[in-house]
Length: 163
Image 1: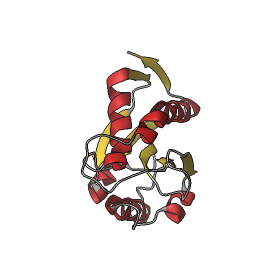
Image 2: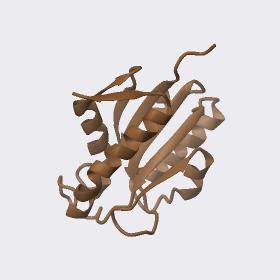
Image 3: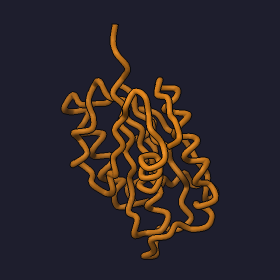
Image 4: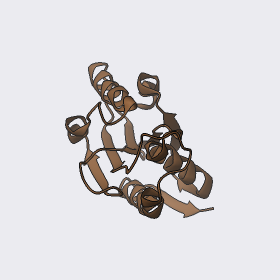
């Protein structure tokens, strides 16, 4: 009856702040190295906050990739779904998390809540230094982040092929 869901991958973070940029790096990697069927939208969301509202809606499935403070070992990869996302976000972890929680709240208030939303989070090791490079710990789990993202997309009916 309905066609495949419209799927958006939002990579969030500040690439100037070491591990803070993991979401953007992951989104760029997916964009450059894979193609998807049906097509999906991959967005470098940076630290845009409410500007990303246009990528939400009741027909959308949204995968957010970001650095998240799970209070676990650096490099830990975790997954939060739907309402559990807002419960986990701590605005003190990163400047843009306040924007993400605001974004999700505004989407709900304006009937733009995604029908399905998953946050693929990576526990950062460092987000305090100005550095375009991620720490070695995060570089070592980068492939795991990509594999997890591809697995989530596959669960949503999206097939991926490496370029």
